[in-house]
Length: 209
Image (cartoon, rainbow, N blue to C red; front, side, top):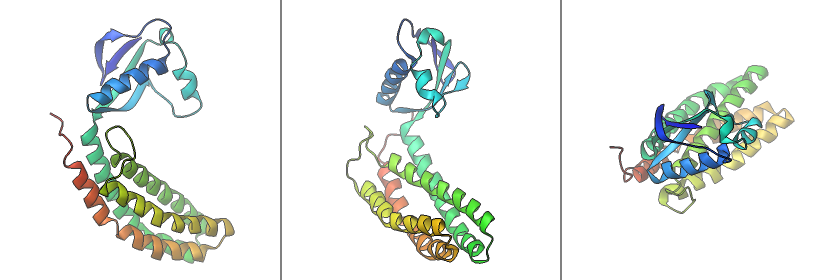
C-alpha cells in the first residue's frame, strides 16, 4: 500500500500482513511528534468512514489496499482556527436564542424542534472544540487556567441542557423557551472571557514555519 501526505507520495510503503489500522496508528504517532495532526484519512480515494464499516476497514490487510492518503495540518494552527470558529459559533447561537425561544412560545413546534436540534449540535461542536484545544500536547486533561475555565463553563451548562431535554420530553415548550431565552442566552453571553483565556493559552504554541 502506497502512502501519501497531503497528496504527496512518500518513498515508503506498507507491505506484508500489517493491518491498515496498525499502519495508520504508527503514522499518526510520527506525525504527532512532528507537531502535526491528521485531519482526514483517505483510502483508495474514499474517506475513512466513522460508522460501523470503519473498524472492518482498519482491520483489513494493507495488501488489500492500493493507497492511503493522509491530510495533515499544523496542530497549533488548527487549534487557533478551532477556537476562532467556536467563538464565532457562540455568537451565532446567542443571536439565535431569542428567535428560537419565540418559536416555541407561538407554537411553531416542528420548526422550533428542528432548529433546536441544529442549535444543540452546534453547541456540542463548540464544547468538543474547546475540549480538544485545551488538552496538553499529549492529549491529556492536565489542569491549566484555560482547561479549568472550560470545565467550569461545561458544568454550569449541563443543568440547563438537562432541563431543556426534560422539558422537550414532556412537551413543555414554554419551559424550553425560558431556558433558551434566559439561562442559555445569559450563559453563552458570558463566554467571551473564556475564549480570550483559551486563545491566550495558545499564543505560546509554536507557529508553523
